[in-house]
Amino acid sequence: INFGIIYGISGFGLARQLGISPGEAKGYIDRYFERYPGIRTYMERTKDEARIKGYVVSPFGRRCWVPGIADKNGARRAYAERQAINAPLQGGAADIIKRAMVRLPAVLKAEGLRSRMLLQVHDELLFEAPVQEAETLAGVVRRVMESAAVLSVPLVVETGIGKTWAEAH
Image (cartoon, rainbow, N blue to C red):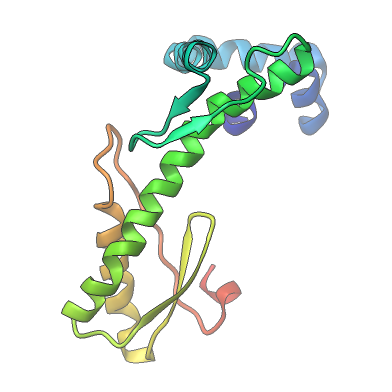
């Protein structure tokens, strides 16, 4: 529900996803905004910023251009508004993982680990490590990722170990 509401899901769309009536879904959305009024404020402020500047800014200062924010076509404008709200959130998450990725090779080397980063998938990093280093690597990666940004809420990182990516989940 969190992501759907932040990304502009309607009562009808939420009802369809949850298999409930549109009225009940609208009630969920209304109660969500009552409980978390700062989210509605963020959404409105972000749309206003995009209308004025033509872009929004990620938490680390990256500009995300929002074409269509002033479009006369309501559907295109609504799409651009959703992009404006979403871009700082996803852009901030991308910035955080990139910061960790830049720092990790030097930290692994300093720790004397032979492990190596293989790839990134969304908010996950996949490593190859000797079995005897796996636990140490997990701790090092968690420490580096959790310190990649200072936020108003804790940045919590989960790790998993396995012979395959699926097993690590």
